Image 1 (spheres, helix red, strand yellow):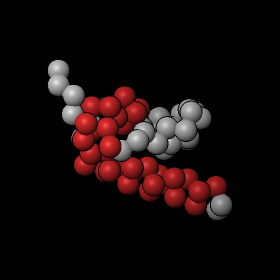
Image 2: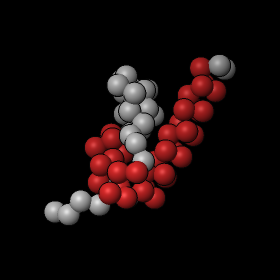
Image 3: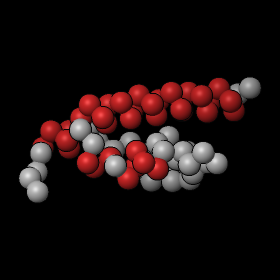
Image 4: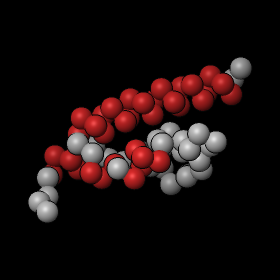
Length: 67
């Protein structure tokens, strides 16, 4: 296995506050299980896409809580 430093450029959004909701979304970083477990093997582009989905989930969560 070769080491690709480019994959490591984007830091994990994990904040060590892991708590899954009923849709298996972490309420700390807003990633789903597959995104969490696959993070280290994801490309830079995939990580950027994951972070975009996390931002949407977080915004939706805040909107729901404020409703």
